[in-house]
Amino acid sequence: MPKTSLTDKGVKALPLPEKGQITYWDTGLKGFGVRVSQGGTKSFLVMLGADRRRTMIGKVGVISLKDARATARRTIAEHTLGRVRPAAVTFDEARDMYLDQCTKKNRAKTIRDYRNILNREGKFGKKNVADITAVDVLRRLKRLEDTPTYHHYTYRVFRAFFNHCKRSHLIEHSPMSSLVPPSVQKSRDRVLTVDELGKVYRTAMTLSTPFHKIVALCIQTGQRKGEIAHLQWDWIDDDTISLPAEITKNKKPNVIPTTDQMWKVINSCSSDCMYLFPAARIMDPNKTTVFNGWSKSFAAFKDECGVHSFRVHDLRRSVATVLAEQGAQQVWVEKLLNHTSGGTQSPIAQVYNRYQYRDEIRTALVKYHTYLDTLI
Image (cartoon, rainbow, N blue to C red; front, side):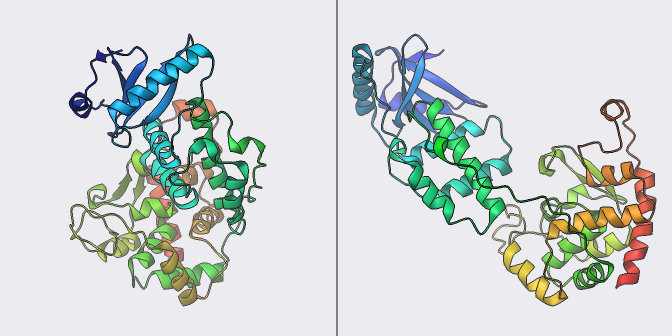
């Protein structure tokens, strides 16, 4: 463990680790240190007892080095006298510490989802995280009852966050321990009828907006909407689209054969940006983000096509169903959809059989896309 004489100037100059976190311990006060995260967050802490329990004092910049050292000295004294209390840390500070910790094990998208939920639904601000009660959390969760899936996911994020706070000794008890998890929404089994699929595909193939084009490619490929929305020109060659592992749900790359119908959609996209579907406001073509106007675009699209009772993810299930009806083998469908469950392949076959069935998938897609043409 690195040791140094902590000074105001020295704390500012502490280098960031390449990954995870590193703690620099003060040579002047045993047990007092600064934890530096990969993301740039620096926090004062104190380590106590034989179990080397670490208690956070506060973020650098929010609390001064002088006050942090005084708090550490008082905490060490109270521990010696058997009167240790969790240090006062605000919800915002605890949230930032938690998200920094998540960078070691979670994907960027997951961290972004956690941050959005904690910011949107956990508006506790400067309140001491140790003072947040089960009633406080329940009051916020109850407002989400009309969106069961989001309600349950928010509960899980809160539970993970407060468990982290407890492990970090920011709180004595988690307010989630007395709360009953909300019911999980049943898995959907919605498959569009031939008439519905025709209406949706005809509307999508007008290629009127980026959303129309995303839906068209979702129907043509069976991929997830987020994966299609992230498409970059560099991932497309003459006869395939290659999705890298970092944007797929199961963190495995996926190669999709292209067809003439897919190229009609691809060629309709502007090549002014690295993304096929950039966000609406492009300030810098090299720094823009991907399409993100889902809610309004989907509402308008449903009004346009006349099919209201479906979700974009239902198209993925519908694609798999049509392919199976046309005689495509299940293993081909699973490879196309980039499933990790294995389905018809035994676990040992998944390990040793590395054949990707690309030619078979291409043949199946050509047949499927010829069928889609009849729906337009």
